[in-house]
Amino acid sequence: MVTAVPQPSPTGSTELLSGLRSRFPEDILAIHPFPGLLGRVEVRPGGILPICRYLRDEQTFGHCAMVGGVDWRETREVVYHLWSDDRKAYLELSLKVLADDPHVESVAGVWQGANWHEREAWDLLGIRFDHHPDLRRLFLPEGYEFHPLLKTFELHEPELLEVKTRHE
Amino acid sequence: MGLSLPSKVLPASPAAGAPGPSEPGVPFSEIETVRAKEFIPPAKEALRDMLARKGTDPLIQPVFNWAGRNSLFPLHWGLACCAIEFAAAFGARWDAERFGIVPRSSPRQCDLMIVNGTVTWKVAHKLITLFEQMPEPKWVIAMGNCATGGGPFRSAYSVVPGVDKLVPVDVYIAGCPPRPEAMLDGILRLEHLIQERRE
Image (cartoon, rainbow over the protein chains, first blue to last red):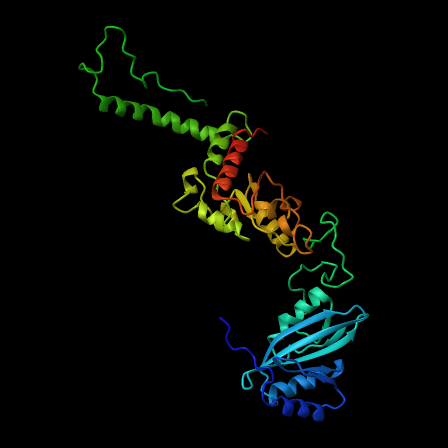
């Protein structure tokens, strides 16, 4: 049974997006419409923290549903899905960082639920989140030397995969 | 001190022409009383003497093996769907406790580790720690394809390809997951291994 299908164009999206663009003219790079979302907003990596604080405090986005990553080989993309209980709709933020030194400011101080999502993105995709309270690996042991969801990671023969299981 | 039975423990076998069981003789209850009174003290001393020997003594080791194989205590440590079969084996239908197998929750009380499920690298050092916390002598059963060789996740980045990379395994049980009969068969094979153990 399908319940609560998001509407194709949630109401109030134009006011929200135009307000975002006028408030952060430097940090908003592009805004794309997307069915089921209020919009997909591309932001500059340096401006993610004030935008997130503004969305939480003044635009009722109280829930960070997901922080994920995408490996585009030259760049890596970080995707945030924010849920607003008042609007009953999602907003997507995304930003791209260079693959040489992928790091972005952590939003775990804005939404505490982002803590483990960012640990997962660090674990599997190697994106560092600055000023994260506890940036350890989530699924793999400490001492594992790969970020296995990257395109450059090749599946090893299992006998060749040497993992340090003891801290001695 | 060896086991020396008193000479009058057993009643003399009735010779030909002696009164049979139907005829009046020594009452049966009296015989039992005499036997117990005379048998228990020397048997106690002999048992104490046997237990004081080393477990690897060729005279005493069969006794230890017999006692160990009849009271295998597996560690209650489910990892994946094989643990459901493990649980079913202790239910009313298969009733693994009739073989003396009682799952315990503390590794200090166990002598058998049944690895039932997919072991990831994240949990690997905890498995080694639990294995090292178990007192000697101890045995390991790899239950299911995942614990035996990684199963369908063999080439995954996060899965240990066979638990024998971490701990010494005595018996492998195939199946995905193995049925409770297969698990009981593996445990009975382990009991044969224990019975034949010589050091």
